[in-house]
Image 1 (tube, rainbow, N blue to C red):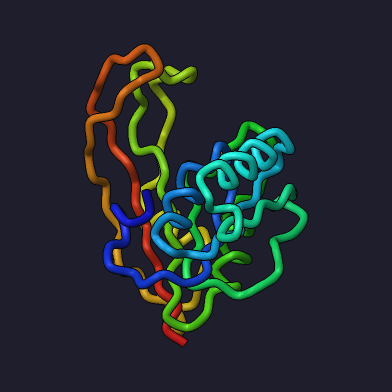
Image 2 (spheres, rainbow, N blue to C red; image 1 turned 90 degrees about the vertical axis):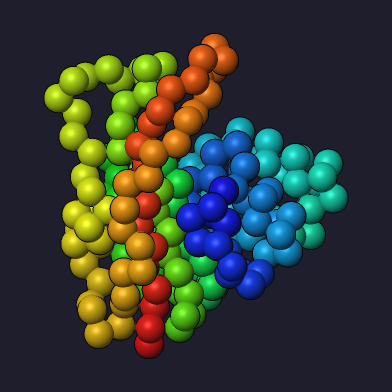
Length: 181
């Protein structure tokens, strides 16, 4: 949930990149945000639209099927969320995040939450997998320090529950960048 990583933001307009099943979009909408949720999967955006409607949040969630590699939804936003925006397909993630950041209004935040460890239930148990730190992600996005401020770059640990109900401690990499001008 975005409120866990960036507490106290007043509701505004949010862009959820790679929304998947829409948990973050629904949470934001429930907090009063207007959310544009984009995913490449038609099934994901159709499922999210139905869920938003069933939760009486259909007027707060706009779903968009789109390839973030090719384009971003139009508009200006107060918050851009990218939770676990990883794919085995060709995606220049740094370019996608940079483009989305430039859609932020002054004072808006880019929130990037990535894996920082491998959960025991993960499909990829490669012991050599490397998770870039939040500051490495920020450097890869390449936002000018005169216009952007890193507000948070850390690696909190939490207890997560896997699909079989077992729990394990995992690490997330959290990056919050604010547009200052």
